[in-house]
Length: 609
Image 1 (cartoon, rainbow, N blue to C red):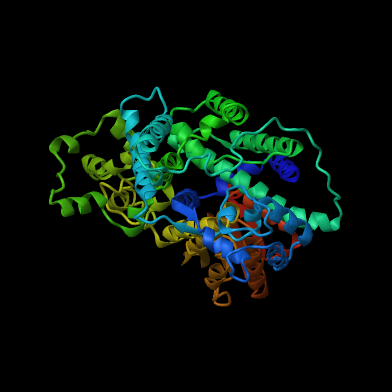
Image 2: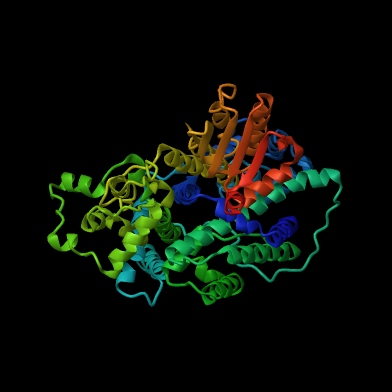
């Protein structure tokens, strides 16, 4: 972990956290859905028990019902382990309780044996004919209901803490005093033979011979752990910001998180402790319980320290089912349910109304007149629509405009994913077309307007969710960002458009709109297939375009060479002095006596002169 800590601190110094702005909302949605799925799958193990017979049979090679030391040695040898004889002897002595030279099935079932660590883990789900299954379900459902409904009574006490206390009372006062042992549910103490108690950490400098072979083994693991820790922490920070509705720039806090986490993991390695990062489950519980300041995290750390040192017996009394119920609620709170109806295009409220036979309430005159023209709110919406859709002609009725953009307001109050609210069509400068775009594309509240996300956004959400579940978070986020960038480049690359006109002076003007970069340079070149037929003077207007990369400059160089070879005088007007400076940096490849490059401001200065 010392290597992980150093890498994370270096990434913090290098402002790695600022790259979080490149993570689209679709990837964020896939991240939370993937982690919620992982948490849910992990809780299912609470309903599993060890299949002792299958584990015992792995060692019992001759199937005589007993395990001897030779069978243990043969099993470990098949696992390609080092020091097989020493390990097998130690495992055998620890399991042979009565010293008769063999291990019986009853002896093998004793918890905490070293032999269990080297055997295969076989687990099966509890069945409904077991009494503990029903009592566990009772505690799980009771814990979920407590976490969800107790805050409606009071928020002065965390609902998760109340759920744990109530579950402990029911388990130890009712179940274990009034019911047979088969109805008892496992507790934290039952899951660990040595308990959860511990002592103070001891300082120890890691000893490692850092040769090329050791670095080759450590580096991939350390880099992977560092990236997983930082990405999960930064995205958890973004999620918490959404829950508490904090819209401030979190770049500084993300950098602080990188440095703090790196230092903590480095210190953990120096004290032979396990490293860690921000955990979305605990963060969600903390924020939902009202802990949004530094005091809450400090108190959690102090109490965790106290539980390990002196209060371990209290923790060991907590039923596993209580924790499972709490984490099931974390899954419900974490998963972004709003993306599902948007992905499948279903109006959930209307569908539920059809199932229950309850018709959907129509809009009342009061609701339609809730925003009247001339009020401050309506003026804000007018200005927002005018800025977003570049509407210049407001000759259409302002009342019609207000009614059409009313659906913008619910966006500000929900947590629905921004990325799955993309407009299906590009904004139009025509007022009526813009109104239709607002009405159809920006109605993000799926309960009121049945929209559907683009298939690209739905694909990315599903992809990141699956990759998170089956690989790790770092791989999922990187894959999601790459796929999102490819989709964006493909879509924006199709926006290049070239039109041509010839004026009375026999000067042909090409007007280019849309960004010019690697994804659109081919389409740009295809519009200049008639260079030979063009008049002697050609003017190319790029003020509606922008030069983004070397591919754009190479396309201009190709165009300039074609006009020079044809003996045509060509003037290329770029959008700004920045583009002109970029052209000059490209050097002689753009140079030609017949091609002149000017910026819009420079051309205006020449005309004024």
